[in-house]
Image (cartoon, rainbow, N blue to C red; front, side, top):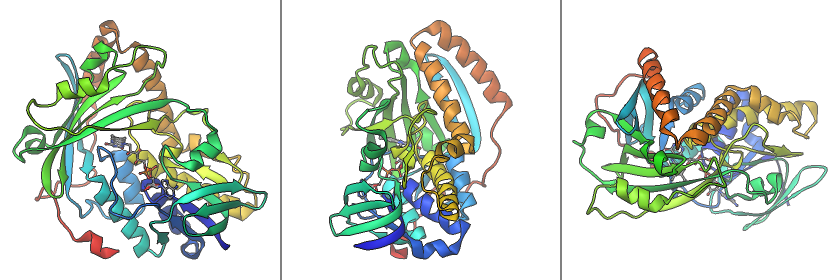
Length: 387
Ligand SMILES: Cc1cc2nc3c(=O)[nH]c(=O)nc-3n(C[C@H](O)[C@H](O)[C@H](O)COP(=O)(O)OP(=O)(O)OC[C@H]3O[C@@H](n4cnc5c(N)ncnc54)[C@H](O)[C@@H]3O)c2cc1C
């Protein structure tokens, strides 16, 4: 049986961010971390790929130079639509859309470049906590770790071990990618749409339309998010709503995935094992998970380092650290807003004034420049060779 101090399950943004933040605390962590990934990069990942300013700042703090050398679509203008009303949110950028397989492969390559050991094609099949740590069984062997980080996503084993079989609050997300022209409005104007009009038909969420690049080709990235904030109510018919939103006569293969909400009262750890990213919970208002996944890594790394320093692996302090962190405040605000907004979102008497007030506030507070516009709208690179 191999031993390691920290074993991270999953090399999505949450797992990689945890490893990079540990290295940032001390380069000595390099020898003490092992990441196990069941797939191999660039792996398929169903996702809109929108990384918000929150996530971009975490990358900056990790000294990852922005803009990343990947194909990307920058969004400077976000239109939040409700019927004929709209809120325009501006930022430079407000978010950036990446093709997720490429983004994750780039981050994994960066972790390797900084010396982190990442083993792909190795699936964790069993987890058993003991008084000394966690025994981990995989398709290739067995490990004993003082600390396991569950970064294995919303359907992962680690989440089930910490939170039990209880489903918690689960949102639904469907997405489709369709080739489009680079001259279409989202590309020309660096614009994205979040359309909340279907809340009148019981959707507790929105439909989106993002510009993106898939294999270097301009692609319309469209989907639907249903928070399921009021679980007992009528279920919106998501595939039908999404089809009605798409341009007619274009083939659309629709794929979906459940995601678990962050809630401030959630359970995020047991002794020797803590959760990050989707395993811990995403923003319930927009279903944003990439920025938060990157943010979880910072809090998890500090908590792990404190645990080794004190020799106390109970992780009783993880939830408190999380809630007091910028990520915890960000997610708690989104959680409270989701409960309020989606509770009343079926009622125009609530949504119309909300959009009126929101439009005024957005006009007053455009987000500043995070980094300058590139001359070329997308950047190609042979980043996969960096591995
Ligand atoms: C349709 C859709 C659209 C979305 N759009 C957006 C968006 O535009 N912007 C945004 O911010 N968020 C979006 N999200 C949410 C976002 O995709 C997730 O929040 C994000 O991927 C979380 O990252 P993570 O690292 O926690 O998990 P993941 O990215 O899911 O990574 C988990 C990793 O663990 C590995 N793994 C799983 N089980 C095992 C195992 N047993 N052994 C070893 N490895 C394992 C997996 O292969 C994977 O690589 C969207 C989600 C969906 C479903």
